[in-house]
Each structure stands twice: as structure tokens, then as C-alpha cells.
Amino acid sequence: CRKHDIVLSLGNTARSGCIHDRRDKMQVAEIRQNIVLAHRALERGVQVIIEGCGGHIRSDRIPSYIKYQKGLSPFPLFVAGPLPTDIAIGFDHIAGACGGSAASAAGADYLCYITPAEHLGLPTPAAVKEGLIAFRIAAHIGDTVKYGRDAQDKTVAELRAALDREGQIRCSMDPGRARELSDGEAECTMCGEFCAIKIMREF
Image (cartoon, rainbow, N blue to C red; front, top):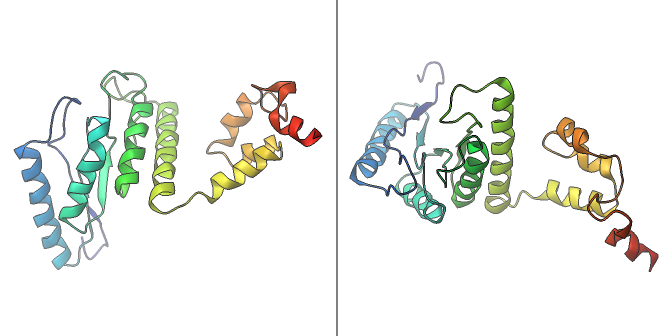
């Protein structure tokens, strides 16, 4: 692994299967074992990330679980999801992105995306794209908290204030999708002629 500059990802197999599962002795033992293995790899010049806090974790527990694991070792933490609800079947990419943004904001370093097909079957390319975009958004939300990376959000806010619809679309995660949904109007579709920005400009 050192010769070929391979990064090991030490897996998280003792994941919670539903949000009613609490962290147990097996999960803690796995975390500690992965940390031991990570140190052994690093001593031999092999880079490591550790998978943990994945699976199904109730929303209010996500930050404390992340901080617990990050507090045990210096290694980057990779999380699958986590899913903060069990009822989003068919929309697990949305539920997972909610959990992923909370995990990222709490200190997780990598997010593993989930597709709408999670728990149902193998995803199509379209489902993969949906999952990836959902988790790119989740990661961005986390980055605004961890690193203050909100310059792009400020740009979009300024474009919105300037009623520059095309500019907003260009700055979006998926311009093609945004353009497809746009009705072509400059002002907010919800407000129409009662657009607060346009009215304020008159005064």
C-alpha cells in the first residue's frame, strides 16, 4: 500500500440498523480496533481514513457520536449517511443528506452518498446522480459550518437580489436541472408582481 500510495479505508461494519439502536459495546470495540489498526498502518507509512458513525442514527445523537469518535483519534472520519429516520424508503438520499450535513458540521471529514434505491435495489445511473447531488449539498452545508465556506451562497444571494435568474442557475449544483425547472421569469415565481425586491426599488 505504501509503494502504490494507497489509502486504506477501515470499515464500519457494526452500524446501527435503525434509529432505535444505541451505540453498544461492539460498536465501541470496532472503533477502538480500527484506531489501533490505523496507527499500525501509519507507522508503516500507509495513509488511513476510518469509517464510523454510519448507518441509522437518530438526529439528536449524530453530533455527539461524531465528536466522540473524532476525539479518540486524529484520523479522518468517513461516514455512510447517517440516516436519521427509518421511514424515508425511496427517499433515503434526502434523509441521508440531512444526517450527512449534521455529521459534516460536527466534524466528519468524508460523506458516503446514499441513493433513492437504498434498501430497495441496485441504483440506476440517474439514482446515483440524485444521491451524489444530495450529498454534495450536505457536504457544502457542513463546510459552511466547519470552514465558513459560504462565499458561493453569498454570490447566489446577491444574484437573487439583482433578480439575475440565469446567474443563480449557473451557480447551482446542477444548472441543467435548475434550468429545466425555471419558468424563465426574473423575479421569484412565488411572489410574481408582488416581488418584495422590485417593490422596494420603487421606493
